[in-house]
Image 1 (cartoon, helix red, strand yellow):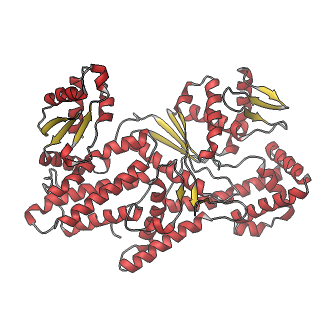
Image 2: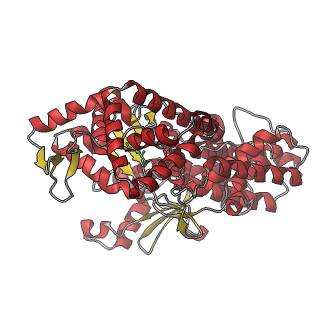
Image 3: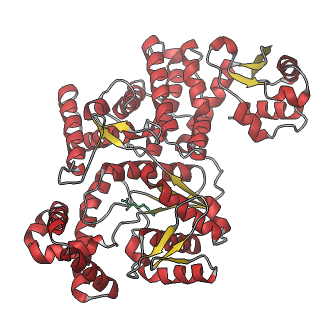
Length: 560
Ligand code: ARG
């Protein structure tokens, strides 16, 4: 927003280059209470630098702030408090939002550079877990935020489709599997076979040897092994795609672990060349100073998860030239990523600095980890379907005449699940509760969607006219809505810098609350002379709510 830039500039000049514009912008606060003004700049950290008291620095800066949008400036207890001319600022904000429409808040931090996002990445022949769901919705939102900030994104689903477990699966299928039962319900059946294999192998260790042999055959391209693997893979991907479709999520690449089979020898050669590889009990490892060694090749010659990730990193840098490379994967893999990044750094790759593990906590049910092992599986597709059914039930009670009910129910049901995940900081564990997610009150997706729909119907009812120049409402109660609208670009910036979609989720809830409060205190359509000015604010709110929801991966139905 222009007025903020102006204030930053004035403060910058009065500090004679002691702080950068960036730093100043970072320090500018939105005061908690009205009497402290609309923008505040704290001077405490400057006291040492200037050998003056915070208060005298504040007075000095305050005396220099003059601007047509500023009503008055006060220096109080070490803060510069700036009071804005509310009518003028309102006007400016509303016009900027309404003219930019969905482009409001677009930033150019990314300058067209590439970010790769590795997210979702489920394992074939296994159910899509809650952890994969978390990765999917967090990763998708981060991609949308990155694009909003001017990055190009490559969304990669690094499918877990390779590893010794496929030897086990092939052995199990050849011994106990039936083609049509697998075709009917692939993931459940394959999981059953896998679990059965483990039970049997406890008493019959020779099964493990067979599994190793079959994995070796698979690696060597044996036709039977290869065709079973391809079949399992396709069936699984088809199941996963049902979930992606419901959530409205797409990927640019499905190159999974198997894709890197023929790209790993190069990694081993490079590591050897750089004298980083050591033998340890027949296996090849890269020793690391403060971490356990990174295992590259097992004694039997087979490669590992880490080896494939090394190959993938090189491939991505060479093909996408990423500036940043984000891995949205649960906390439990943090050692793996530390090792991966350290090995690449030791190999001398500068671009490694752009890589980051975006970790997240667990999904809990009644305080315990939601497990997909041991047959006790929570089938995600069923969970999503249940959320949609509940949303439908809600619609049928409240608004049975609604058009396109199925679609709205899907948007509300899936939106509830996504929002519930993203409103918490990702590093927290979260409790899974469909009831909480679907509430129409409180911090939920449906609440924000409902507020958006309410704004939409108000615009229709009041016959809002789009114009080239808007008058903003001068209602006193509208001011908190206006300041929130003003801060939307800052929120996006923070979400991007900290890879933290919860910033946006919390923001849209706050904006919804402020708007509903305003809506409850003023009869919006009664006074014909004020109607269009009020509706232009409603229109801004609708635009920003919709855009905020979009960045989280939610739809904003016009009617609910
Ligand atoms: N498939 C792995 C899992 O389910 C996640 C893969 C994450 N991505 C990566 N490049 N390692 O645990």
